[in-house]
Image 1: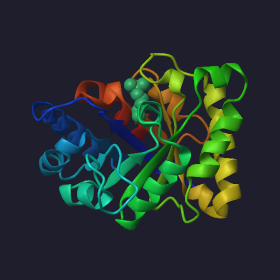
Image 2: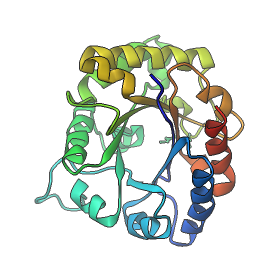
Image 3: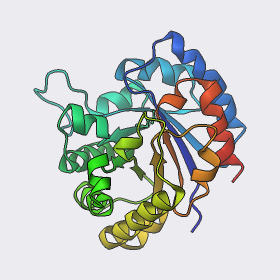
Image 4: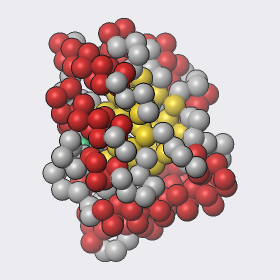
Length: 248
Ligand code: 13P
């Protein structure tokens, strides 16, 4: 089973209308890499102008609420981000788990809400440093996948992202063996949950991916792309990652 590589950016709480100029270079690189899917998740306020500015890019949200509408002050629904121009959303990012106390069950409910609107979902999992040190990384990721992946998940709308928390924004990455080991376990866990559809689900690696390490990480077994934070904020840093994926 060949899975198209996917390079996704996550701007987190960064960016401005002025920063959307970066999308021009990213869209050009994406057009020059027809064998790679390129997505960029931006803050809610930038979804509409980003989608207007870069109509050929897949622009997405960083989160959605699990309900379709209702009395949830300050929250944003999947239908709202879709209307603004989002084609996908992240769910279960570790920063939301840490900052907002979100759980794997929340990620499951948010994925289902996004699916109801026809959005693609990138669902995040990953262990803390303490969990890795205690040799629990594999079990933690398996449990997160078990609780967060919807029964009807398949690669047409669902992507998993393995992001060890201790590698996010730190410049530290797991060894290639550690990455391959978790991705293999994640694929096996998906298979127990959704059967053969697991073969079509892309599993991204995230955490301090740069133009320097992308080629080796993306070449690991069961690594179908990257979820990129800091290095997605500028075309100068993000384009080399797209190019590395295209060369595989
Ligand atoms: P960095 O690439 O900045 O480490 O962030 C990874 C991440 O959290 C993407 O969702």
